[in-house]
Image 1 (spheres, one colour):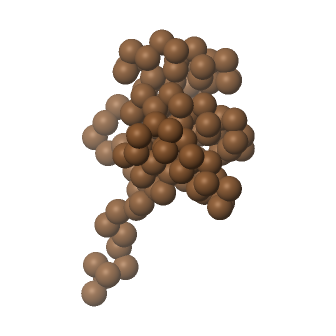
Image 2 (cartoon, rainbow, N blue to C red; image 1 turned 120 degrees about the vertical axis):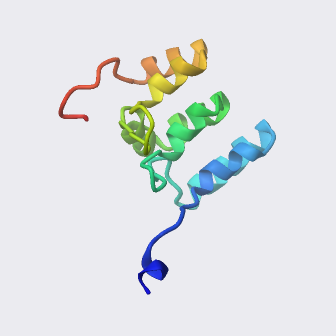
Length: 121
């Protein structure tokens, strides 16, 4: 049967840190990154672990990802995701929608683009 070959979900280990208290979440994120995790890993809808942390207003985790996972966060910061039936968005748009000014400014300081051009889309 083909159903056995079709993925039904994905697990982003870095996203599991969101369930922990902030200090433990930061520690766990650092540990996972040291073991090879990347914030650029995406779920089946194309949402990266970095974007999920932004969506959850996890500012400490976003700062940790920007500091330690420079390649993954650089890849994810302007990644355009279009989950099924939802409006396409970037991490910056998610921070703005959540009303998190500090996180929005942080993303802008780190190179988040305010425009989504055709090539990015």
